[in-house]
Length: 160
Image (tube, rainbow, N blue to C red; front, side, top):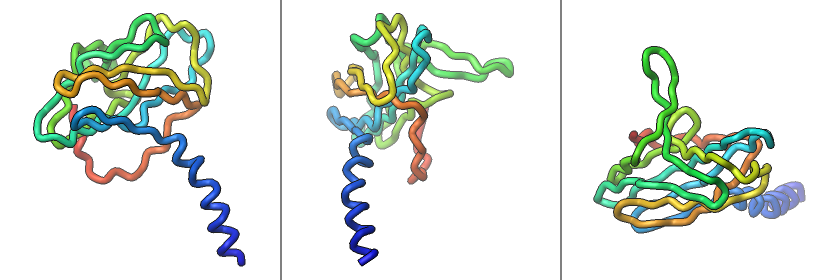
């Protein structure tokens, strides 16, 4: 009886677990769980993160990002220079064939400037990613209080 109740509870809870995960595809590219951290209402900027998997045999390149949620969206990366962590804009990000690129805190990310207002935990906003070969895809960025819990890696094949 206890096993039946446990299975029933697990079945009822599992849709809510999957509801937070959201993935998108365009061409041979798969974009995994776009998210942004909830920021204080007075913060002038925010950042968006996701993982791009290239399941194709050809390299692609993320050329630009845009959203009606912000006055400006740019591709950025963190780099170590002279013992200091710095953030800088990049013109594009290569997505290697058969590989992936993680957009994550302290790495590549999308910077959002001139926000109309900060999004709150549980809200979503659209973000358009434009790739050189695969074209444009609109994703929904989920705003969360905390960074998602990382799942165990199944191969460390991410590249910059």
